[in-house]
Image: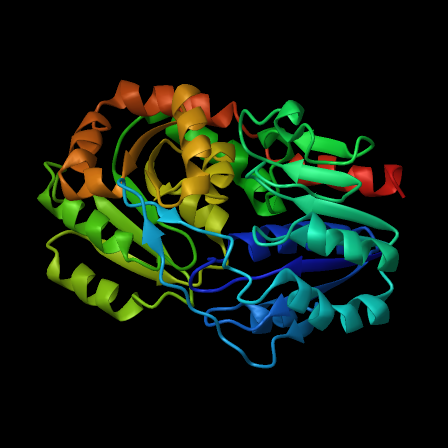
Length: 368
């Protein structure tokens, strides 16, 4: 089976789309598939990283790097995504066409908020089957298989947006997690039985373009948390804030460690008692490990995830403006209560079991 992925990463887009596609590609490769990627050149892309994992990348864009001036809503969330392709869909398809013709894919997987039915319908003639990964449910798609791993997402949310015959995989039971999270799950859940708060992990995704991590560290510094609570900050290798965060960690009188480009994320996360993180793809990783979370909404598409995880009792939510005004400190004070930690951990672990990628790849054979 040959599977071609169309996805991008950048300072604006972040790394989540590429990372979940890599999780799926790695699982498919282990099952004998040949996988390649089509990626556009951007500042902060992960093209070299994808290649380092042994996957071929068809590069489009001729070295063009696109940067946008993000707009924000009243809570500080990015209003985003239609401009993230950097060019029109027609131009992107024309530049992707040689890859489609050369690879001769059995499956094409599209994971891009700026691509819809207009691009996908043109690609149809060059592939046998087409899969879309989405979590917006805001535009039409042409596909055989749709994956939306948002908690609480229902197939009816895509009514009139997909072909009638399309198979819809909706909900976080289909969350694409690397095997390491499933492997680490039992040990992570066991260590939470004490319900003590000694170690906090802060991870706002691979880029954190607006340095919300810095705001969080300041809030931790201003909080009533004990001085000896350990803080681990995880940032991506493409983060523009690495140096400033390292300097900030040195200035704050708390034990703070800054880790860059972590390759053993499941072990790093499972060693923590509480997470402060974005309401994106890492939400499912934290749930699988049963880590209580103060969830920060950074983008419009994260609001539904945050809302549903808060409703499920797996997390509490804050936005950027609440962090600035002291709301994060209030939540951190609450989590010094052992019962609060245990309650949220149990709820989180019940949301995701870490087997989602196995459930998804089974459909590649069924629909072939």
